[in-house]
Image (cartoon, rainbow, N blue to C red; front, top):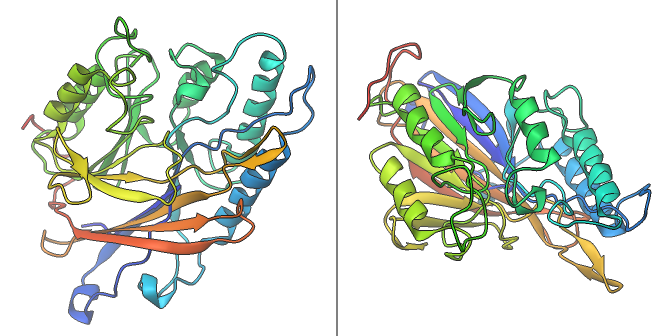
Amino acid sequence: MIRSFLILCCVFASAPALGDDVASVATTRICFLVCGDPQYLAEHADKPMKLDPLSEQANSGFVKRVLALPGSKLPETMGGGTVATDLRGLINTGDLIDSLDKNGGQYPAMQRFEWQRFLADYGLTGKDGRIPLPVYEIHGNHDGPQGDTFVVDAIIARNKIRSGVVSVSSNGLHYSWDWGPVHLINLGMFVGEGEQRREDHHYAPRASLEFLKADLVKHVGDSGRPVILSHHLHLDAPEYDWPAEDLAAYYDAIQDYNVVAIFNGHTHGSPPKHRRWDGKRIGPDVEGIDNYDPDDAGASKLHKGMPVGLAHGLLYVEIIDRAGADHDQMTVRSYVTRDNWETARWDRLWQKQIESPDRELDEPATAP
């Protein structure tokens, strides 16, 4: 089986060391980052030349922190050891830029400038941005509430050359990939049926539910392999944002699969948090699917001359997959700042046993 490490844009504290008898079993490690809501914000100008000063500080600081993480020491309270150096990539749960939910005036120029800054920092392949990791982003409401903006078009274009993608939705927007035995699916704004928003509701799902169902049947089936899902909205979003019938259909679609984590963005909820969802309730004490909120990566700005949003976070996730199904494990660690990434510290640790059955990756899957 495979020892997998997940780095999320909210970092989780390191797991306790395993016994020598378990550690001696051959493992494969998969490491990646997950973050959300960098919300690059340009200065208000006809031809922006720079970001809002706090947006610049936050996002530049975030990049520096990410660059320093691989190989860095984890405190004993977080399990000790070091952050993995073989990171597979970074998931970003949306709101990549700030201004694309606004129209007119200086906003079109601001939007283009913000997107260019996102591309310069994040890149795509791990070789074309300041962050040296393959990037797996989705769009949020600030990137286009109806999923019909130039940023969404850019994500569709990026999906054609994105590393490791095994499936793309018919509209080109949603996609999935594999890291070892783990199957990961990015689902855009939220999971819902149809291309357009429902009457009297807020956002367009862009047929993410249809893609999710088809992808699970084709790439997971009854294999029992671990599944990780990411989307922008949180599971207890207002019904106006996430229609009740779509939320219920989402749970129905995944409840029989081995979903080990759902990651969201949107909330800017400091510090990063962990809850569980049973399809009707969500909370830390609910028995259900594990849901992780990484906080935002860089959504800071000056508002009427005053600083707003200086607390941020990211996640470092570790999945350990060994031969058999008895010693597979997932650990999520949060890494946080209260001062716009000027300083940062490890904060919380969540750990659980997971099941990752042995199977050949090219073995055909059948529906559960």
